[in-house]
Length: 121
Image (cartoon, rainbow, N blue to C red; front, side):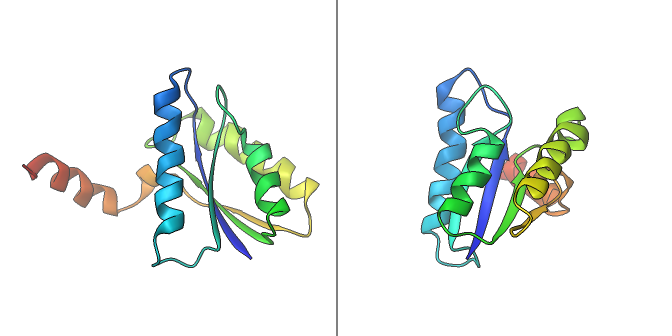
């Protein structure tokens, strides 16, 4: 079973956290992807935290987890904190393939998205 875990910073503002959870829910209901499970987790300030999100994916049967940081910039969280958390989880679950993908802001499609958002009416 293959899971997608979307991770965000987390906020004291619950509505912000709910937006990330809703994205994961909508993706899980979307039919055009290769994931059996789509979940969300947070770095801090909200639940579930990243380690708990990974554990939940594994408890649901995932043997491969793609971790996608829902971050625009490569700040300290993206370059240091998240990789450290993922490395610890890989050590904790050696029988599960956990892959950390680049943050969404690093994607080349962001340029097109920015232009589209700026010109849509």
